[in-house]
Amino acid sequence: MDMEKKEKEQAEVVPTLEWYFWLAKWRIQLFGRQWNFFDVASVIVVSVLHCLALLAPFHFNWGAVWVAMALNSISGVGITLSYHRNLAHKSFKLPKWLEYFFAIARFWDFRCIVATTCINGSPLEWVSTHRNHHQFTDTWSDPHSPIAKGLWFSHIGWVFDYRSRFGSYEGRLNNVGDLKKQPYYIFLHYTYPFHSVALGVLLYVVGGLPFLVWGMGVRMVYMFHVTFSINSICHTWGTQVWDTDMSVGFGWKTIISNLDGLFGLLAHGEGWHNNHHAFDYSARQGLEWWQIDTTWYLIRFLQALGLAAEVKLPTEAQKKRKALCNKVINKKEKLGTVGNNGKLQAT
Image 1 (cartoon, rainbow, N blue to C red):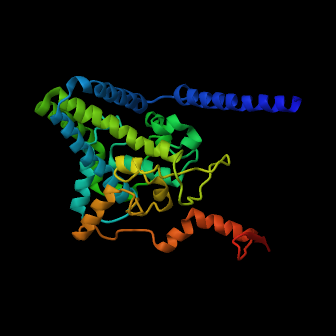
Image 2 (cartoon, rainbow, N blue to C red):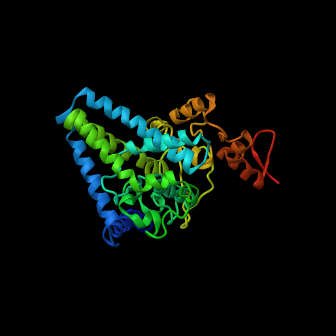
Image 3 (spheres, rainbow, N blue to C red):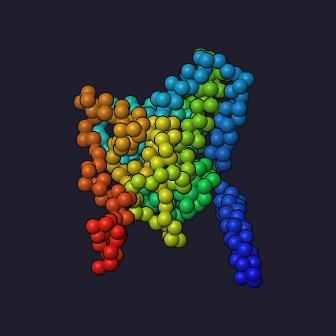
């Protein structure tokens, strides 16, 4: 009885310790660091957009809703096709005029209001952050890891921590030399906030407050949380088909998952995140026919027109090496052999 009582007490202590651990981490992330101008400005921008979205029920009309949906599709493709698969991973090549067109389409994503306020708006900063994420996946150097830094931080807290993304102002953008060589991306880097402001003014002039509330507030809050959920939720829950062969510094195995198609649909195919981390060079993230990937459909269409070239996809041999089920079989084969009855036998 004493042993059972002791085990019960220990079981009650563990969740309590975990709670204090995450609470302490949360307090450090908010108050245990120095906030700079970029961090404060990002908090203001995100807060304003959320407040704007709260006005949606009071300024509803179908015209504003359709505008929000159209802009969401345009800016969504700008992120997934241009910033992510084309610029960050070089999964395919486009003619420069078309590459630049998709890159500027991303600016219709209202991520900032003033020039010095960057959530991850310009191509240079977005690509730099994402390349750091893949280089240091789910380690302390990952800009937004739920394993290393907690779910809240990986979802939105990292947006308010400039140093978590770039280390320092001077050290930022050290992994996007290929883009910094192109004057077009330098121009966008220094002017992208003005595109967003111009869009906001245009929406207000054309449709008044309803267009501004839905076209900016609702659309951006929706896009924020869908995009951020890829960083947080898809690194925490879901199904894992491929072995990404990553473990964090304190011994936990990272789970980079496909979340049952939900974010595959909402995020233009980006939700097949286990697929993506297994084959980050692939232009197609929905690798199965039933995995909806609207960005891939557009890339395939451009390829059929002769506009997308050098489209990268994983081969069957590469898939076989990464398949999680094959990893399990190989591990068993190292321990023994499989007999005719399908059971493992010692060697």
